[in-house]
Image 1: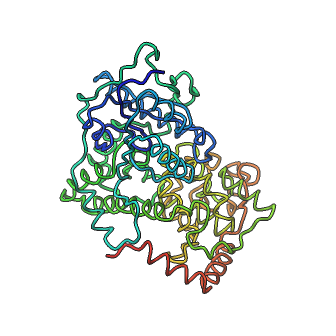
Image 2: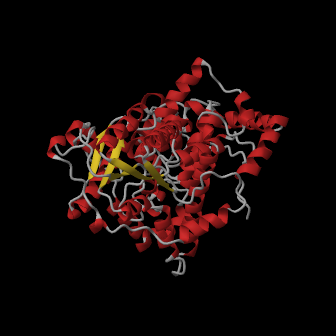
Image 3: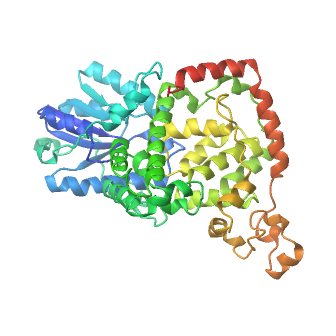
Length: 495
């Protein structure tokens, strides 16, 4: 292959948008022809966190970008290859610069980026990474982090001039195609099959969702955050768009701030802005200590004793499939399986039930649950999972009582009956603890809990007491306390 004119690669990862895109702005400013590419790497196919729901969202997001770029005779090039092999081949064709956002991802992507950096250094390719949100790399402490966050989040957005995009024109001898490009037809058809129960990806829909939130439904966001059914309508529903970069934290925060003085909106706007801030806080924690993908943030909890018996396998499977006999637990898991969405309180409850009531090691459930979240974000998922599992040694131990959560957050059983339809005829007086329905009541509705549903796999109250004793006793250990001091020093953000 003959070397052609130098060109730049804009390497898309979790930034599938065209506005507020610093790498794309930098590439255009350089003036070289540009290839915008999304690279499907072999490790992604093997990653247990990735399911069809995620690939479908990614492809929908890329298609949305294609429609906009088509107006400027440009496109997103989809490739499938080991990224270093691709870059090696493209360097022969004239690749001189790479522009991308930093990725705060899993161990796979971290090691991948180290290999890419090594290749670029050896091949004299300039790789320029832009920060991800307000995350700092590297970071030794959080002393000035809050000031940095506000400074980054309030600065101007980077909106590229797409009319200045220069397309790479290859010689005929190269068949007008760079190595490893593939067409949609070469990818699984299910990645392109729309599913009505899942949010659809794309920058346009991200903005529609944000503006729709501020029309009316978001006014009751603050009061309904914890309610599993109402939250589906009154929460922002921005999380998958933020996770895959259809919209940036900066964009969402700046729009939210414009509504803070509207009558009746103050608490909801403040709650949303607070959660956008926490978004970067947790991702920063993961960036600073990414090893917590595989071990507890508090090293001492590696000695914590979980149930590894054969019976735990049965209980784990019941939890994964939503067949525990605890209606709110099962409704939450089934809703997540079928839609990829669940409000935060119910997510926390699922983790609490797994690690506390079932006493199952967090590592046995963390990948499965992450694979169900359409908005899976490693930097949020792993710190949050460990926090809810009670193994940080710093956060309050929360052992959610699923019966009380059910009675408080779904008193009429609307959410339960929607996602556990076999309970649709159960009176609301018994919907939270179906196994306690009196025989005569069960007979009247032709319901047999063992035949039509399932008996609870554990006694919630008994297991909660055991978990409470177990967790608080372990927390008294000197090695737990010593680690807690280290964690607070490294990750606490001063007021």
